[in-house]
Length: 135
Image (cartoon, rainbow, N blue to C red; front, side, top):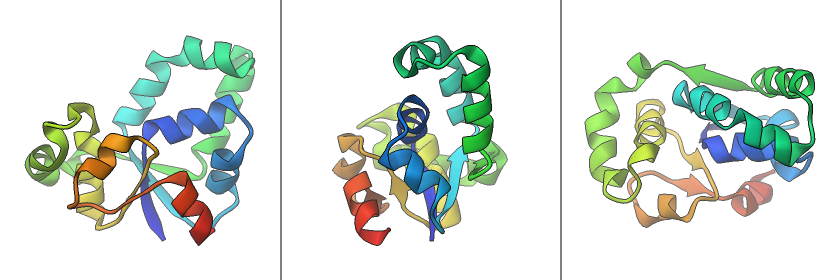
């Protein structure tokens, strides 16, 4: 099953060796995320390092490892869906437009625990609990 993964789920997998990381690295899911995700992770790198207790080298190694299981997709692959995605979630949470656009482009659900994703009904969104039931 293909899923677009929200930035926060990847950050959770970096910060704590828990269920999110287990799902990412030990499942049959095909994970996709917009390139925007990498810039967000780098933007919050110091905060992630502080919360995780990792040093910079460990952070980099773990990030590389996680992204062996997550395919980063370029905006060109979902640009044609940005307008539709903005109509769907733009008024709810504008920074999530790339995730909805990617889900539309690849005709797949989103994995996120952010409640605002569930405020729309155009794209299926799975929470971690729902993913666990599929796992």
